[in-house]
Image (cartoon, rainbow, N blue to C red; front, top):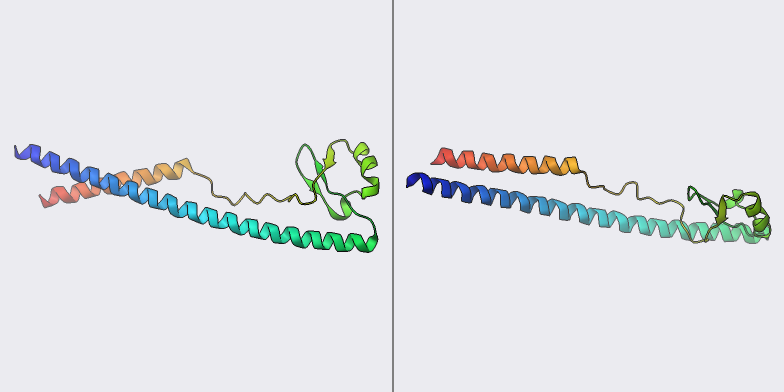
Length: 148
């Protein structure tokens, strides 16, 4: 009888330890998600500021020269050509005929997609965390068995 009571208590403590580890994993996920959202918002703000600055510079330089340069995108890579390398508006059709791999790009489209620093889910890291959680629960059970 005493052995079955011990096993019941052991199973309860084991379940509690696993539940605590799962709570910690969930909290860790929430913190990482919040940080990711904050970084995304900051990127959007910087992206908008760069866009506004670029448009101001483009418009002022083009107004002084009297000729507007058109943004073009390489269709295979998505790379956008701007500024002095971009064709003039008056020469756009001829330029596109000479360069068939390009198309006109909207002026407000941003070329740098700065998602490279975005946090990716690492399955190995998840396995490490689960392994650590199992070790913690085993330690709790060892401590409990020493106390009994």
